[in-house]
Length: 279
Image (cartoon, rainbow, N blue to C red; front, side, top):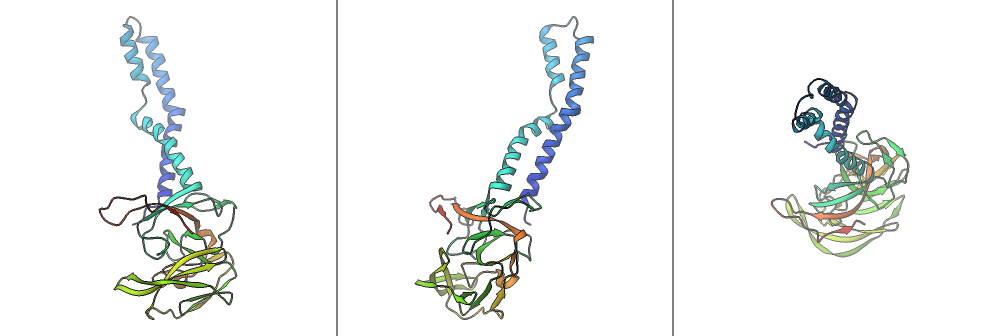
């Protein structure tokens, strides 16, 4: 089960802030009243150190309030950073190989495409729009979880993908051969091809399996207004808009900008030697 960390953070911030407010409005006043009453009725004739101990005890905050006040600033800062600036994300599948590998930890720029409210995702400040060739994190139309793919089609584009070739608005996208490779699949290693694809100003690697299997019945799509057509760089091993359709602008999360850490699955230590910008 996927955990909605934004929702968890919002609830924790509300809980800690609410407890702090409750203490400021009610509980603290009760402590002050108790201290005044002690000074008037019980402090007379007692030793100074005994009075001091009693006053410290009467003014002491409940443990839950103390924790709430300590955690609130930290949780609030994390919520702001994660919701509006930068959010970490781990690559769970190989659909973006060779650009991104399973176990890569990336940073997502949350304000690149506009400032959105946490949890509900409503855009409150419009900054920019996704551009063709950028790597984007989003929520797909069929599942409420984060996906990461490359922006292929913009609103109004006609996308055609056939015989391992990509066409946008009737124009073939340039694909330069690099080398023959072995591609890991669920049935083992298969021969494939590594190429550089040129999408406008973005040049990025893609890989294809030489085998003819896995052909899709549909080859052409028209991107509706306010939507984006997403594809993985691992073209023959990616569930993307070719299967579940274009992504609504409302479900855009942010732009993937960098790999900051990598950890192989299992009991392996993370490494920082694969840090790089994402192209």
